[in-house]
Image (tube, rainbow, N blue to C red):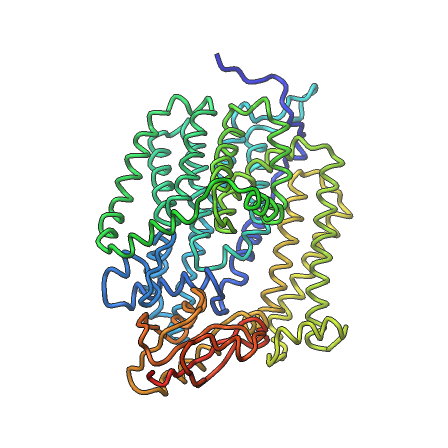
Length: 582
């Protein structure tokens, strides 16, 4: 007989579970996702690669470019095509409308990012609903107080769900990733949907099975076998650990069958392209190896900042609720975290796309740690957020002042080297928004200092508000400079002019050209490079730090027609060479 332990680690009063204003949540979410999403160029690598694959699906003559993603004529056999399909559909439907008031290129960029709004809405909705359902369960409730005064299950569940949502938004590592045209924003929405589906089984098992199938199949189609294994293993483990899910274990067969059926609708036609399918399998094989201490330590080091501030709280939750590991509010998020951690043990070069699989379970566990913390620990969490983000805000403003005034001189000189040739004129509307954002942060800090609010969500509001303020300042004060330093628009236009000036139908191949750079040239000027080794012209990617003899790596004579690089970039340079038809 399964019984709930009588002594729960959660201690909470009704005032501590007071309702967070819904308007505040919506404002936080809208500022978070809209700031930095539009009115900028795609940057390398994943951002511009995703857009290039979307445009290739629409512009290449063969239907196979839709089934098997490409970048121009290059097979892009990595991950899966789902986010590319959705982005291409958005461009196809909405880009003609945006072309009424912008160029075709800018319209395509704008339309490609609109699905991110849908992904973010799915993420916050399913995360909040999933955590709310988990927190309302009997095993998750705080300890009843001797004379009453503990919050009701609904108030407690709402408070935990609000905290999970704010902690997810406050996670440092996904801030930029949620604003790019890559697989990551959709991946977060799918993982959050899986959490919601697992929390739904006790009430609506049929709906939960359908949603879980869509989440697992979508994950495979979006990021490939590694992501599907990570989520699938976490789902199976949840049914093993969680006592409330065990009666529905047979539903796993339907989830597996439905996932296989949905994925086969893509796999079967994709196999018609033998070369692409072979490269897809080779890419997956290259992602895995036997556990290597150096890779594990590197991933562990990166996760410390990527999952901040949720990972310390998640560890505290697991420890404090260790007697409740078989109950849904701990077993489900813990299982969804173990799946990605197992994958990272065998990952060859795990990075941010793989780290994002831990964001949803970490935020959920972190939320359940809050009612177990002592008052001193909660206050320390608050003050760390205030000091950290106040310092970051001040640093961003100091850098902006140095860029436009030349003071302090050392900072100004360092920035000038990175933005050589940049027009430092002030965008006054953006400056006004930055000032308003800074004043809002100041008011939030003063609110914390003066009122000493009892609500447990105050620390999460400070963390989320501080991160959003820093992000808002970056995209208002620094976006023109960042766009200048990271965009390939200008260098791509220069290269396109040189190539178009060559003899008609000139063949240009590449040497050492990165995937992000190839994608950028395709996005901005539809430049397609050949794989024919007999091409007369060569585009070489090299470094300006190398000497002329080190750059000339060819065993035959060449003549340099053009060289270019992004403004201020001291590590990357491009050379267009003529081999003299050797």
